[in-house]
Image (tube, rainbow, N blue to C red; front, side, top):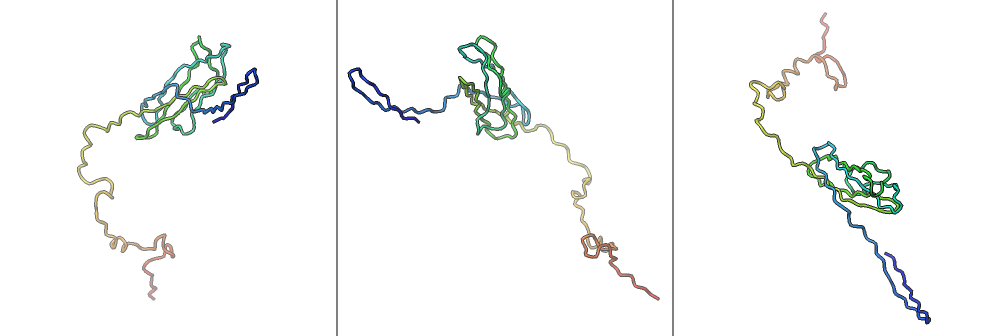
Length: 185
C-alpha cells in the first residue's frame, strides 16, 4: 500500500492536493492446468508453448518456478531459458506431476517470469480413481501351514528345558553345565 499526493497547480497560482492510495494485490491466475496422474510414483506431464510480447521481437530470458506452499510433487522444465517472441512456435514448457499417496489434494502455483511480464498458473494434480482388486481370492491351503508359528502346535517348554545341558548366552555363567559332574572314587 502506498499513499501519495496529487498536486494540481493552476496558472493563476492555485494549488489543489488530492490524496491517492495505491493498493497492489496478487494477480489473478492466467489459467488452470489440470494433470491427471497415471498412478502413484509415476510421472504424468502436460506441455504448453508460451511466447513473449516483447516490442523489440527478440527472445527474452525467463525463470519458471513453483511458489512456496506448492506441493513438491510438481516440477517444471526447463526452469530457465529464453521465451521466443510472438509469431514463432514459442517456448515449450513441461509441467510434471508425480503423486506419492492417495487421498491428498495436490495443488501448486506456477510462475513464469521475465523482466517485462509474469504469468501465473494454478496447477492441480488429479489422481485416478482407486479400483480395488477383483476376482477370486486364492484357495485355502490343505493341511498344516508351512510356517510353524501358524500351525498352532503347542510347545512344551518344560520338556525342552529338561533336555538342555548347558546355560544359555544370556546367563552370567555362559556355557556352564546345568548338572554339575561329581567325581566318584
